[in-house]
Image 1 (cartoon, rainbow, N blue to C red):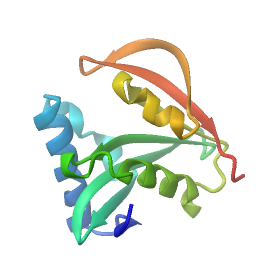
Image 2: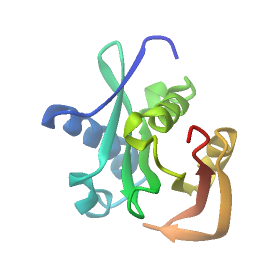
Image 3: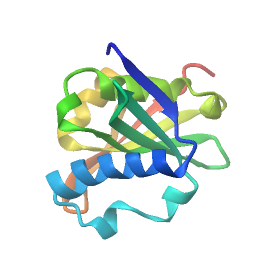
Image 4: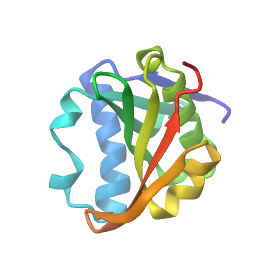
Amino acid sequence: MSGLEIARVVDAAEREACFAIRREVFVVEQQVPESDEYDALDASALHVLARRGGEPVATARVVLKEEGRVAKIGRVAVRRVARGTGAGAAVMRWIEGDPAVADVEQFVLEAQVHAVPFYERLGYVVEGEEFLDVGIPHLFMRKPNLQK
């Protein structure tokens, strides 16, 4: 995506920009209760913010699990104005190439069912049965860290 700048969040203002995107996508559009959208993991997670022309357009967070062997990617959100432009895929590829996750063995995520084809195109594979998270059907997905 031309003009897209992606970086790890380093201050409160950038983190609030991530939260604003998540609020717009999950709380407003998908009707996820705000109390379910934000959790204690937000304090320690690695947050990523994508901007186009200086405007925040996409975000995701990464939580390291299993003593740093697994990177759980979550809260992937792209503002409506940037959907279909490659911003989401660019954020995912940026995360997978971030030195902070270079030593992980695998990436995992819980995808909303409608987004499964998006993640499959990025090499993620569905595991297990469909489950509900905040009333929305999800599937667990996994991808080995091919960079390791």
